[in-house]
Image 1 (tube, one colour):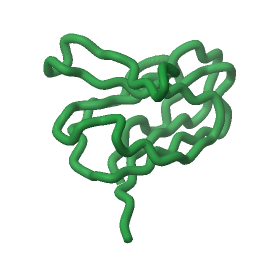
Image 2 (image 1 turned 90 degrees about the horizontal axis):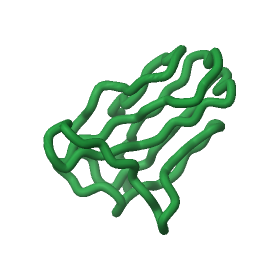
Image 3 (image 1 turned 60 degrees about the vertical axis):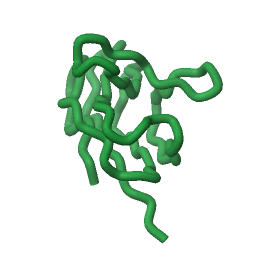
Length: 102
């Protein structure tokens, strides 16, 4: 497991991590999102610029518990992070990557 966001209780970004697993499953979960959304972002320039990752023109943004495969959206070796925005008083918001195994 690669942790992107751990126990967040307010708006902000998790620590960036380098994508090393592939293919991968993303899990986002919380006790309460309280109107917040977790987006997954990638940086092409070592953290100066962060860009929301999109699938078919729609940002990877989560407002409820979700597990999904995101392989093919993030090249191995790039840094990604999870960011929580728009939240009132969220409780224990998390995001993590898991390697898909045969």
